[in-house]
Image: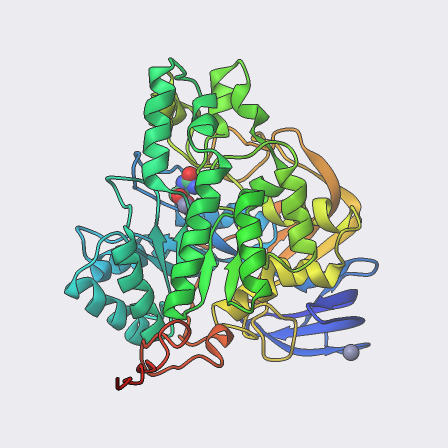
Length: 488
Ligand code: URP
Ligand code: ZN
Ligand code: ZN
Ligand code: ZN
């Protein structure tokens, strides 16, 4: 962006501080944050009096243009990002999948898909098998391609599931590279068993999805991953924390000083499993995502965990399928493509559920939706802050205005929305991405190709104090103390 912008008179909110100030932007970068900045008439002035001026959201968990278990998702890198921008998210980190078993080929495939991007993005890489080549490719991606996180699936048996032996290899490699290990924590064997059981019982509808993989299988895998990460002494990031069971494992580990990050997603905070029992299959199927939504109460507990710092940031797991695709599972819940929307709704939902309700402050909101993600993935303060030198990714939220969610007005290509009809307080009226006004007066102005790939360097703050040179397990395997020989 070559334009000059002045955001005038708003309450500028960062994760640690808020003040009434103007924000001056030139060439896509924030130049000054001060009260009463004076500018010439070549500068576009945006009025923010009475409103909050905050860093654009960063969504740490999305699946755009995903071809995984089921045929492709409907949101590609352009439509998904356009939706994100309309909802105040200005960067996302997507999960790149290996291609024909190769991480580098998978990475290049995603680079190609993301060419049409209209906002900044980064990648996590998924690890779905283990050998010497995978290990070497991880190294190359970290050292040359700007990847600093790898996700392991403990679920999806027979597809991508990683056993404990491989999980340990992967964690060791992550540690040696300063890359963050991430897990989808559900016990894949237990899920498989649960699914068989449901089918035997004749439960084939969407409710079978929740019944077959109860929170205990999420809690077990979360606890196991945490303990294995402790054994290797490397930081761990648990994606889509959906249950009290998983959250409590994280709480316990953090209390003992272990570096574990927990990411709830918007749907886990806003919804519960009752939708899966809806008599209309088309409606119920919208809510199939893994891990499943839980009974009422888990949502509130996850909110409380966010507000008390037990969980650190909010993602979406945006993975958009149309109703015709969901219909593949009309006779068998195992064939319902799993995934829900959220990339456009997250910022509004978190404001309404967490700030408007009084559970957190606007500064906490900025931390949970933007700053902490930037810190964890080591791109702070380029991202996640309104500071001189930071990228001009800025939102203006009007706390007195309301939002309304509907498939009729959303910007995703999905033909449904899991938040259909939901309204709330706090509307994002303006989104500025890379110094350009991309969302204003309910209108999107987005340009394919304007988004940039953001490289994420290894050794984030989570590695502070850990041995950076090798993968020796400093916690569990200390230099062995030999037994003294006893002479008789
Ligand atoms: O059901 C989901 N969440 N689909 C996307 C892939 C994943 O497991 O995150
Ligand atoms: Zn100040
Ligand atoms: Zn997952
Ligand atoms: Zn996901």
